[in-house]
Image 1 (tube, rainbow, N blue to C red):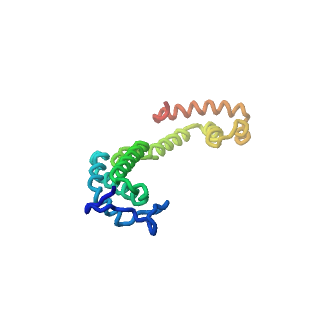
Image 2: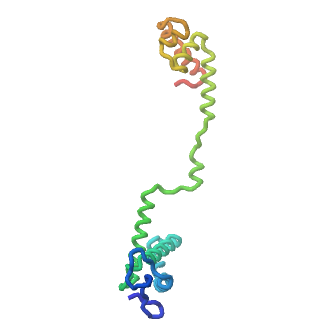
Length: 190
């Protein structure tokens, strides 16, 4: 039976009747007496379950008492301590599994070690490529711009530049060789 410290039997009070209704909650006096009698032992058990983490243990005890408050019918006419300890253990297992299911949390120090996205290297590379492109002959530069930067086909580039398609192909070939050489001089080509 559920007995308080004074030795009297504590009964669930679920409203006007003594039969537990679905969705009913226990009265405040019942929960206070339940906590007064079992709270200390429950906290010690929760400390054991959490490896000495007092904050987690207190959270377990609080959630266990809330479950007893929400489900007083589970404690009707039976000893409360085994039920409370079983609920606390189940909550601890659920919390452990939830922590294992998600990646471990890291602090701000770990985030400071991760390099931030920096566009400075990309900007420098872009300037060097533009400089290398500017060093090409004008007819080579125009072919590269049309075929690579504007994405034109050989026929479209030929029409835009007013030269035959075969000339676009050969100029593109020689322009790429010259661009590769210019990039190597700047330390950018492989």
